[in-house]
Length: 423
Image (cartoon, rainbow, N blue to C red; front, side):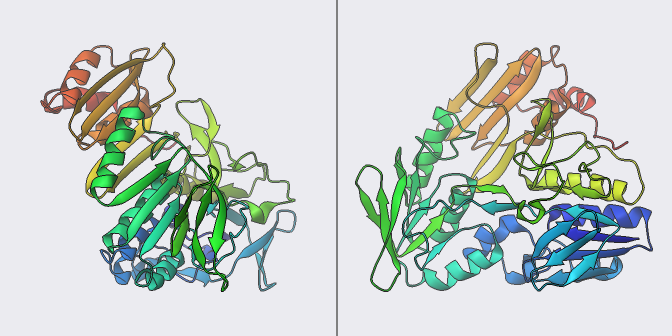
């Protein structure tokens, strides 16, 4: 049996470990368009800021590859998948056959078709090579513009700000992390960024990238006629599922690759996992793209198990963010904004600490935690399990929103949040 995995990612690691737990003899081959073994992509901002050394970027040690007898093809891009012939074609025109295929190519940055977008010193910020290139130029760039105030833009701002550069974020919405933070949380984070030297320009979009005669970026023009100078520009508008390699095939795609609860596509021996898929969303009751590392790893395990002949079902995921920005911790889970009157909202604010709980039908549906993320894991599991918490809802809200903590009711919470099992 030959298992071929396209993409060196969290999903790939989960798949490999699960395959090997079932099949100790099959051949496993990973193909990656990056020149590195599997690394922790969320660490690239810390690498940029010199907080993480290169040797500590890798998600698994060298022994992982030896122990699992992996063949690794790096620096090669898969340009075509042939489901009928059970083979993939690489950009050097070489062909690899497979018995089982896992597509975990993740997301690719959205680059808007702006005039001047091809100027020098314009980068995205999703791969290690992005961080390496930016790092080389950082010493000579005094001013940096970041187009996009989502999580990628924030982490880029943190990394560059830590190097002493003047950073300005341009965001079309009213504040940063506009998809998950409400107005109160957004204002707190915006003030925190300002206190750490990061300026914000909100409510406007970039209309043109400005460059000098040598083709190097010099700034960005906005739709309101204003312009801002820079010597380095980061495009961080967002990512989209990287599905180019299956274009023209019978593999079903909506926004991402469509999979069932076993992470199987509509082609029997082809599976997919991670940021490239539309998988089960617990709160919506349908498939959607939820691009976060823990779910990618979990989906990879499910895919690997089923590829190797086991039986495993994905229990589903929820939208979630957990990060630290200039030493401010924040978490968001589930449904957090644009809520109608059927939702019950309880919140608390004290300085830079803000907590918001969203309830409906005696279940926890969403959480925002800013400045204090204690018990975030337990709250996440309450949402994932869609547990009936009628008996503890008021006590839960009082303790989370106050300072008492959840210790006294933690056993009850844990009884409502069993560890998900695969079956």
